[in-house]
Image (cartoon, rainbow, N blue to C red):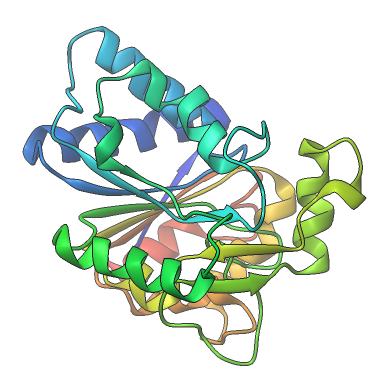
Length: 251
């Protein structure tokens, strides 16, 4: 584990974009696991800049998103399908057939989840997974629970997650209460993981993810077991950490 502490959100976004860009340069046909929400938006903007400058190419890249809301139309402005196209895919040269997002409107959610896992396996697994983290320590939509869910699955969203995500909707009642999410085992099988965190509201979750007991009650804590994970956190999110001490302990 490595922890990179930066001054602010912009520096976090730039660091993350450089890591993703390096992955695409070193392996042009990389399989990327991508995240949504407000945290990675800056990273996507930086990647678009690099693409427009001719520094990186996404033509052979394959992507798999972490999650999607259940029973939300793809053209709904709050769907993650819409988010990815609007904020990233429509601005780069990734092939549409190479982008994968769980279908929240699938008639058979169990089959959709199993098919999603098969697609990831058929692609050779995830070379790099980008994660955010919730205030309650969730990664993807893997919420605090009594056990880790291994593979892609349906999840009932935690009250804190619904409250946090309500800022994207007109009111909290409009926030979907269920989602389809990659499971912890799928995430942990990624060869490399980058977790991004910004803001003081994430400080407790970051501290517990690094120093706390490994428990499904704080899903991000499982990342302590991954052989190649990098936390990129701004000053507010890392306010409870002694970053120099952490790097000496984990490197």
